[in-house]
Length: 148
Image 1 (cartoon, rainbow, N blue to C red):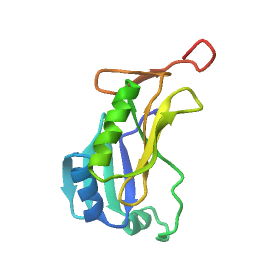
Image 2: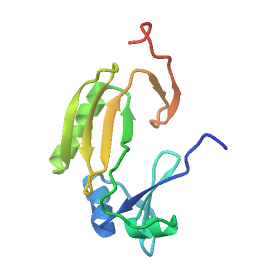
Image 3: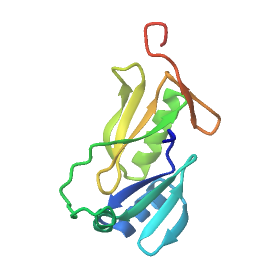
Image 4: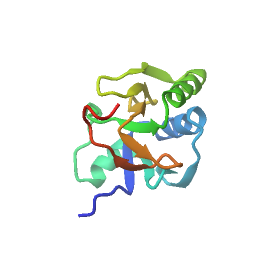
């Protein structure tokens, strides 16, 4: 199987509310919408919002509103200042800041915010990532004493 990602779909309880969060708070624009689904084009893949119960049904599972979220979504920036600027914009939009950005134990700088349904987004500067001009990850530098 190829090592790549095409679509990441979040099962959501309130599709209209979540669409509103991503469009009004983050300023994102949907690239496609259909009955019961919204897609945002990110850097090389789609983020889909789809009703949680319907997603469970599509996968052949029983719907559950109590399933814990065992993941975070992350956006990396080229500098710590860019991370601080992004958090300032989120605060101005009234977005819930879960953890303000700070130096991280792993050598970077990061913080977290939550979307309308508690999905955690990490915004960070990671000195071990090499990003292109669009913010796409090109490679990961070895982690160790020789790196910052």
